[in-house]
Amino acid sequence: MLFKSISANQAPLKLRTRNLIVKSQPVVGFAACCWVALLSIGVLPESAWANTVTLTSVGGGLLLSLSTWMRKSSAGWGIALFGLAAISYTVLNTPFDPASGTTRFSSVILLLLGIGILRKYLVSQNISHVIEQVLGQPRLRESPFPLFLLYSSLTFLLSLAVVPLVGALTRNTQLDHREHVRIAMRSVGSTMFIAPTTVGAAAVALMFPDLNWGQAVVVGMPLATAMLVLTCLRSAGVGGEKQLPSSGPADLRWLSRLIGLFLAILIGAKFVVGLTTVTAVALAVSLSGALSTIHAQGLRALIANAGEAVNNSSAEIMMFIACGTLFVALNSPEGSLFLQGAVKGASGVLSITPVQALVIVSALPLLSVCGVHPMVLFTAFFPIFHSVSTVGNVIQYHWWIAMFVIAQLISPVSISAIAAASSIGLSPSKVSLRLHAGFALLLSICCVVYLSWVGYLL
Image (tube, rainbow, N blue to C red):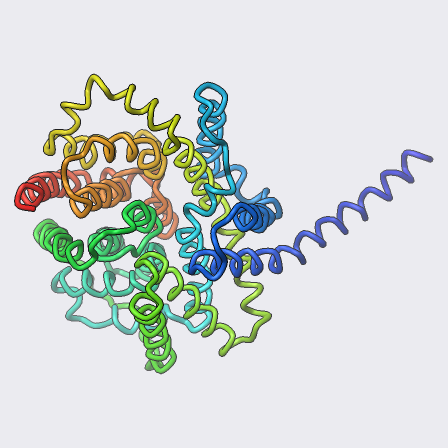
């Protein structure tokens, strides 16, 4: 009788605990978003207490969404990186500082959360209806060129979400949905050579705070164009006998307001306030999505969306915190001394520009095919190559961007491949290496040759 009573009391207790977690998650997520935003834009000074509060607020969101991220591969890599940082702390006496690690990638975390908030707003405004209107045009079936430009433009608002959205819209039609997904994945990659449109590109940009963005765009534009040309040369028709289901005309006034707000915040943050490009983009994405949500649905909807953004991105957030923790350890005096000793024998070879380009652009993406996340590769190898490199920051920046672009295309564990596969009902391997192997090989050759040549000129 006693055991029955205890069991009966435990069930309501578990239910109340679960309800408390569900109700508190949006509030904690919203608070974490606000705090990270304030820290990223410099309103809060970077200090020990600010870093600790950042880790606590973000960590609270992760704790409440534990059941969501604990089984994801990104979280697994995050735990592995925490383990490496702990080993480094024990063996090399490097700092183990997750608080500073969180702050290190606070702008990237803000961009990740902002994309989630903006995406929810776009879904609520039926962005798929707008895209259906465009994809229903017969002339888009004649060449991949206009589709590439369309999907590239959408990436500046939707980031990687363009890929599953295109797959979902074209799957149940007679349009070649695999070809549409192929073009969408490459379009997203091309924008990374121009601006930090994905969290991977933003993470790379954070490592070069003094990067000359005008020069970076000029150098990156030919690579983005090369992706367009290679896609058009190697792509078949994208049409079919049947178009998308017809629908009524779309009201685009809300989209015009959103784009205007986004550009105003971006320009103000970059040129008036003087924030870095990555932080300005993250702030523009987050604020435009937040203000638009409040205008359309109210503050309560924004709080709910912020909580959902933290929940959906929790695995990636944890990985970025772990990457930051390991990066702080490797960039400490003890870590730098260890890295210098580790590469001392090979530093002469690794400092040769073509060799460095080949390893970063061609060899590292192959490791991602085996399941190693590109962020893990970047965190582990960037301090090594950066310390021995003899070329300027612009070339180094585009080497790592090229690594992320190629890995994103050919790795079956990349977010892009997983999202594309789920949207059209195929396995990740069929929309990654099988779909982009030849393209990735040609792109890597173009990147190595072109960037080595530009590096020689600069």
